[in-house]
Image (cartoon, rainbow, N blue to C red; front, side):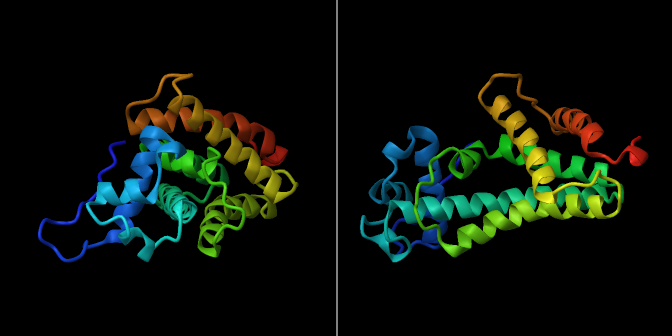
Length: 214
């Protein structure tokens, strides 16, 4: 993933979209050098603005990281929902496969966002409500399908949160192994889909209600 940071145009009085530029600058700094490299001053330099300019949008470095995480969650949700809509499937197993592929595709396309969201980068004690809402929305996208399957008898009876966590853990683990080079990283969407679908079908054997198994 190549992260592009929009710089303020030469001679311009203001940056066209400073907040977004700072988010991308922060993401780039985190991806290339970790938390140690990130600072509002460094982000401002990448965006081509004064060192004081970021404080119009972020009170400190942690606030910038929170904004990056929020955007990451929203992109993850959008990826899962896009694949869910494309699948146009009524079958719960196929809908879960679509969501799983959406997760894996997001992770491989935006590994820096995944690291910020789940890699221990975000250490803020009191996350802003926008970030918490974005995280809940991502999980709810999966949980809604799982809960529907349990209620319809397509998935075995159980706690929807626990079943959703099992699904989430599987695709997250797969994504992390690929990103870290522990297993070969698929280079095409078709290969990404094949990997995620294969593993989710194995999980499906355990969570589907016996009468609904294929």
